[in-house]
Amino acid sequence: MVRSLKSAKKMRKKNRSSKKGDSSSSVPPVSAKVWQPGVDKLEEGEELQCDPSAYNYLRAFDIGWPCLSFDIVRDSLGLIRTEFPHTVYGVAGTQAEKPSWNYIGLFKLSNIFGKKRDLVPKPSIDDDADMESESSSDEDDDDDNNDKASQPILQLQKVAHQSCVNRIRSMSQKPHICASWAEEGYVQVWDLSSALNILAESESETNKGPSAIQNLSPITKFKGHKTEGFAIDWSPVVPGRLVSGDCNNCIHLWEPSSGTWNVDINHLLDIQPWSPTESDVFASCSVDKKIAIWDTRIGKSPAISVEAHASDINVISWNRLASCMLASGSDDGAFSVRDLRLIKGDAVVAHFEYHKHPITSIEWSPHESSTLAVTSSDNQLTIWDLSLERDEEDEAEFKANMKDQVNAPENLPPQLLFVHQGQKDLKELHWHQQIPGMLVSTAADGFNVLMPTNLDSTLPSSGGL
Image (tube, rainbow, N blue to C red):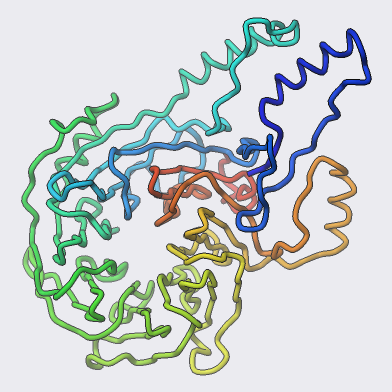
């Protein structure tokens, strides 16, 4: 986000009009400045604007009600896709006003072209527009026609869910199988293959109204948790193996068995991702400020448990490209990265306190082992590259080349690669496993799909955006 004067075009018109009379009344140009939430304040006459040149792609959409949780559904369109247009499949759970109004929404966003977009509406043109505006009208018309041809297509299928959805996850090995955590305290597993097939075969926008909601019985419904929870994760190594954790510090282990699941109580703690390489190992975190590593083969106590933060730990993420690295985010806005090979000693390899509000989501990039993304209650989505270090010579050269074109803060960590804003009350983010450089995030005001331009250098050499 950058800050600038409101209605800049109108001010330029006034400036040109004044030159016909008194040139001394001209308005000097005002350079844009990077906006820092929690640090900067808007002055009178200023507004925040998105810089579309920072994105290869940026789009907002919603599926009706806000969604606390979603997952990107693996598809068969290509293992690694680097060329536009793109197609994205996802599954989300709603937070409706009444429990009976909730649903699981399966969405397909297709016809995604790599044209930079601005979520901020363009200023309207007055009837008395000057010659400069008229001369550019033909070009604007061409842009409008191109925009219409390259508009993404949103398709949606809804499955009734009789409670708000706290968390939802798609199984990577069988993407049509999804698990949902209900606000009422139960976990359900769904076969959503029929809804996904409808999306795959359709090319037009689908009905978003209440009549489009279909009733579907879950494969299984588990009521063994004593209260609601927010933790659920499919094993990336063993198809069908699942763990679910509730707010009473209880974890249940689900083992697949002849089309259903045998569910066994394990023990303590809250959020848990499976190890990307070990079939029986997963990690957990909790409000007791601890991170624990569990091995299902050795009983119901953690193999390792360490105090990792100064406040409640909200989220953790296991690096699937460097399985010794575990990232965690806490309630005070800090997030850390630990080397599990040194977990009993000084395992912290990185610690950041950039965010000043609770961390709500954290996830490693599936394509770059040193890159991760974070969302926070401060309405920022940040991307970090831990391989970056400050180079004073490069910084000085950059500033000299840019001169007055950029006014960036001086105290940002060199590992901070990108800051995305514009969403309210960010809850969760995911990298697209099959489209390098693409992220999807959900917030109280809907979803964003974004592809930052400065992630280009991390893409595979074959193909291009």
